[in-house]
Length: 87
Image (cartoon, rainbow, N blue to C red):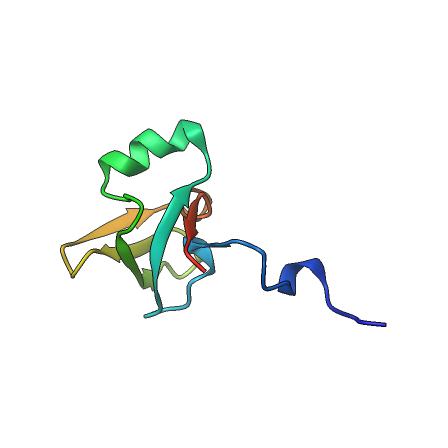
C-alpha cells in the first residue's frame, strides 16, 4: 500500500507558482480563460521560457523573467497559478 498523496503525482500539471527561485520552465497553456487575455498581452505566450526571479517577503507578488531576459513581469501568485508549464 502506497502513502503517496495526490499532490506528489508526477502527472499533476505544474504552474509558474510552483517554481523555486532561479528555476525555469516553458509555458504550456493558460488555465483561466478570463485571465488568459491579460496574461497573453503581458507576454505569457505558450512556448515562452519563464524564470522565477524573486518573491516578495510575504510571498506575493512574484517577479518573472520572460524570454531570453527580455523583460521582468510582476504577478500575483493567484495569477501565476493559472500559467501551466510543460512537463
